[in-house]
Image (cartoon, rainbow, N blue to C red; front, side):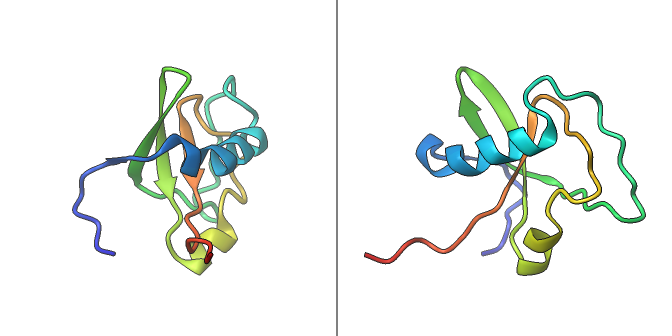
Length: 93
C-alpha cells in the first residue's frame, strides 16, 4: 500500500492491543524525552495517529517485516504522545 503522505486516524479497537504493548515497553505515557542511538535505532516517520482516552497518539508504522523485527530496539523511551504500530495481516475467519 502506497503512503500518500497524509496521516490516518486508526480504529481504536484495531490499535489498542499493539499501542498498549508499545507504551508499556516504552515506559508508559509519562516516558521521558527519548535518548536515541541513531546508529542502531530505527526512527520511522509519523504515518498514522490514534485517539485514546481523548488524547492523540502519533504513530510510527513498522510496515515491513524487517522494520517490525527491529521495532523499538535501541530506543529506551518515546515521548508521551508517540507510539509504534505493527500492522499485521487480518485474521481469517
